[in-house]
Length: 171
Image (cartoon, rainbow, N blue to C red; front, top):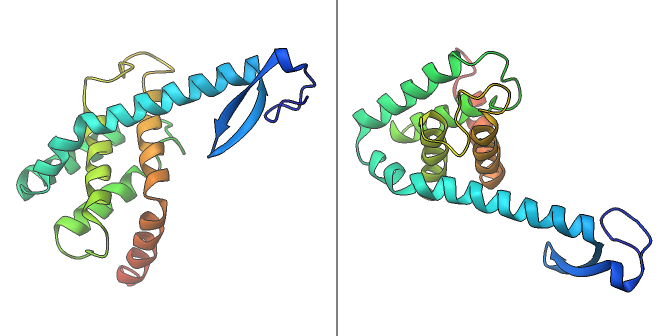
């Protein structure tokens, strides 16, 4: 048999069946362990976003507090040297949320805005899965939460970017 993840040839006893994207595949023990770790990491990221969901929903009802959070997030990002692609879409997320709350861009589901605000709240929160002060890895969980959020809302984000480019073309 062949591991459907890494291509390694194995006996039936050296591998196991796992679900991957709604299909059953045969994988080696190493790939099965990696799949388990990936699943646990995804669950941690989902839990991190969920931990901020209620707070995000409340912020959508309080424009002044919401604006303060957005400004805090922007200040936070300015302090981080070399984040490059890891957190590069955060300003776009903030812009999406700001334009939504100001009523300029409303062609988006409130669940998308809640996910965006929850990710931003997690980003600026001093309480993280991995403390931000740990050199080299402190922002890894922040980047994972933001990346997960972006993957979740990719279509909405692309639609917003197109709108934003058109709406602010003259500026």
